[in-house]
Image (spheres, rainbow, N blue to C red):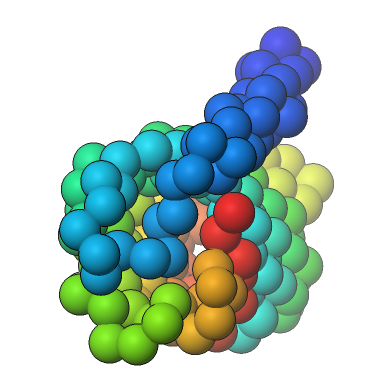
Length: 173
């Protein structure tokens, strides 16, 4: 487990260098109206607030103007007031996911809508751990130069079955 977490931390520290290189070489993922090639890496961080508190980091690779692959998404969630067998518990959750993200054409400088669908594996624990299948569906809009807001729904299927509803705010570099 320590090696796995070490690998994830390594990826989250190394991959931003590649994303920054793309920006410095003149690539601009927010100016897609002039027909520039929109392929390249990006990294994003987001906070979700709702039925749980969530922190997430994502590495994304754009394969065109309207489609991107969420190569790796790592999320930590503090699931407060989760009911298990009628009793309230506070749980910690980690999920590792991958998925796809679709965008609309821009409708203003830096403004575009998106929808994301991520699948993966999650672990929740309080005193003992439980593992489960993790799903995350998000719809939202970029509102200003990489800043985005959206609504996310995230069901976890397994020993800790439940669904979380979140308001997500993030920034994509």
